[in-house]
Image 1 (cartoon, rainbow, N blue to C red):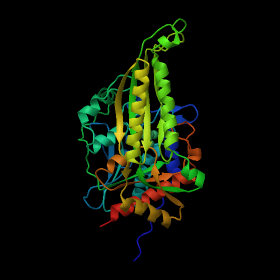
Image 2 (cartoon, rainbow, N blue to C red):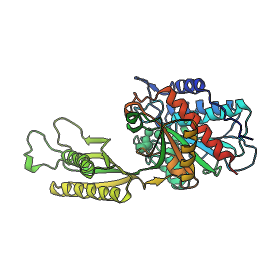
Image 3 (cartoon, protein in one colour):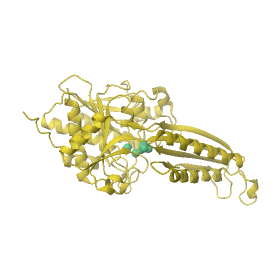
Image 4 (cartoon, rainbow, N blue to C red):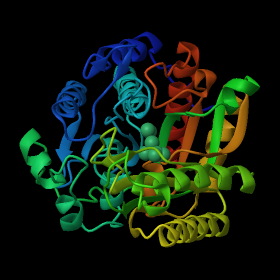
Length: 413
Ligand code: HGY
Ligand code: MN
Ligand code: MN
């Protein structure tokens, strides 16, 4: 007897939920700003938990604020988890992270409507502070969930505005009581927009994500001497701003020189006292380096460090650096990527195997269970930008594929 036909997700309901969710933290241009643990994040969390409960799911909030909702299966086994994040960067789009969580809830709603219970339970999770924009490192909640970052250390982490994760979790009412890392998970699938240009440029519908590239985040603090911009001869200056600018130019040139998948970004920079007629005595800036090749990434880190030391030495400046995040490249489980490929073919979708340029919670869950990801195209490759956009048909295709993959995982012997 052939397997019962897989139910179809309700595309209109999914799209409507994405529009409704985007109202929480809405900013001009159609984007969303829900920086981790802000009031906007709290509103987003409240809205998501309410939807989970409407679906009859049992919801737990753990000690780092991760939300996990469970839809029971016919057997008492570890759940198949669908997860992503609902925090955003300051200039966020409405799909980054949000899409994966809402598609997970659409999967559950579809099974509930069809009266279907998979063998294994399904869990849908949102992880705290995936973006790492306010508190570093990124993927903080999922990293704690898998035991990669001790809970006390995460709670004590101070953000770019001085408050700590623990204080902010308590303030927004999401310092949960559930132990982190529970329930132990059978397998994990994350559906996400690609956030890059590859699928859109090639006209491919689905990315079968094989892994996530390595990431290195460092904060540099250069100290010099403030002095009068008009009276100080050039050869007498100890200009922290100039040295920071030299490093920023070097980072871009290094990435272009390495080629391949090497990228480098100086995304945040501030001078002190930051006045038009004062030579800066301090520059604080971040360097984001990534590569799919661990050895190349380590080499890039060492080169940037050596260059920064050389510039500061030459200009009589002091240099401090703090590692904010460092994750080696991750490969996803071939059993999961194989199911994505197989079910994508069954749906007649065009597919491309590819790595992820962005970091994701799936790379953390891959430490404890078979994990994988599904990408849908980002129009013009835009993300971390209010104009982030994915065609409705692609959003629906991705959610249908997610449903079919998690059912295969949940019903395997
Ligand atoms: O930075 C990243 O790759 C992710 O958006 N946290
Ligand atoms: Mn994301
Ligand atoms: Mn992001």
